Image (cartoon, rainbow, N blue to C red; front, side, top):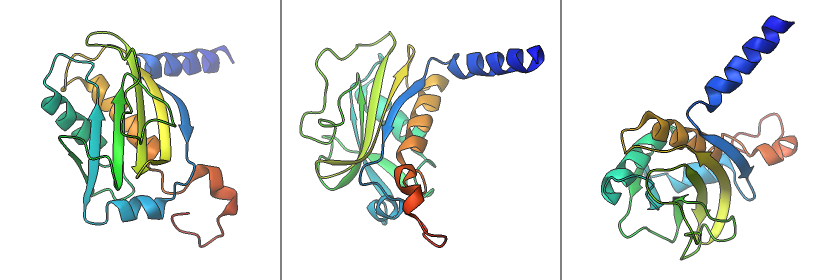
Length: 182
């Protein structure tokens, strides 16, 4: 029994070693079919707010886009950062420094007092349609050294997997046996 407890503790420590941790996920109006539809042309618009590194905003946004690759229901979808960020239609929004479920899909999603480069921080992300967050997740992260930091890739990949599940985990009980993408 002690061996199992020690092994479990080691796994938990390893999982937290990078400093990233998902806090909350909300799926509201999300469905896998809506997510697939949002990237039906093979691209998903990406709005990146905040930059907790010393890298240029463009390099950081490109790294976030690359980290999200393969996390969408449409695994071939490419996340495309927009400058200025696209704030209408279907899009993925990431806010380094954090924000709220109510504000993330709006015109000014940046939270007051967002953290700057060099330290631990927060990340909020959503899959949005217009000003409606179809899915939302928030996470904490450790210090990120730059766009090539493996911790950034792990963080963004974890957040992407939370945002784009095959089905809405809050509505699984409503799905019938043949209910694909519910």
